[in-house]
Length: 316
Image (cartoon, rainbow, N blue to C red; front, top):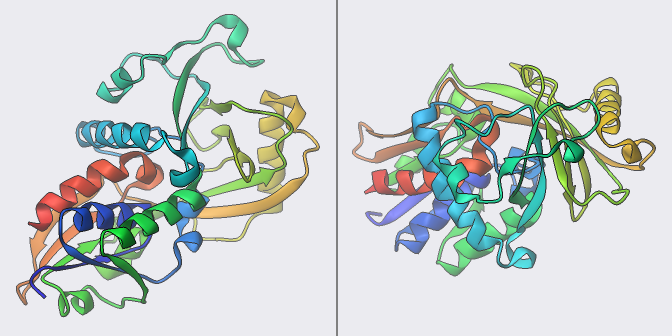
């Protein structure tokens, strides 16, 4: 079992970490309670942007590494689910975004005639926008091609995988609250609405306010994703009709053609937040090495590759 690594968690962070490890020659098994299509990752928007994640000094390098990978993957969007799309991020200054923004030469201050009604400032640029169901399937296929695999398995404690592998990587997200246990992990509930796209081909994020009322429109192959919410310590996975109606109304205020679009789906995801992302290694009493990689909040997609590479290094 000396060359075996068990990754606990089959969302985007777990699968990306498993891919990196497998492509470096490790024998990788992913233990996941749910299929990838039923994880929180599958609900994500998912626009590349460091959203609700700390600490900033570590997030920057993780995001930069991930951005470079997504730009490569965007060369084949049909296979990877990743494409580069144009759009607007309102109420966000260009200064201070971090080194990752330097990789996007088209990112600039929007002209006044490019601003939606009611918006005084925005950035305009082209960013990776990921079709998460397609991307998760791609990661599973890439893992399989590298010799790894995914097993449906519920884990009651991290001692279970440690009994079968010399290295365990904990990518359990919100599950880390019980598995570690780590009481600092908490859910940030996000609700969104998927509607028939009335012809919108650019993404739009209105980041005014404290983040709880951030509005966004993400055109995806399966429909137009409207959001969203960010409710700390909210555990209810059921869509709330009043919240859904408010989301549609906020988005329609930005793009009036959304009003009246046929609703295709309501979705809720519980983002696995923590005061700071935990990527570190500890030694277990039985001799196995445990690498933690969890607490990514609303930016798991944005930092997945950077965190995966750091976790792989810690795995030895």
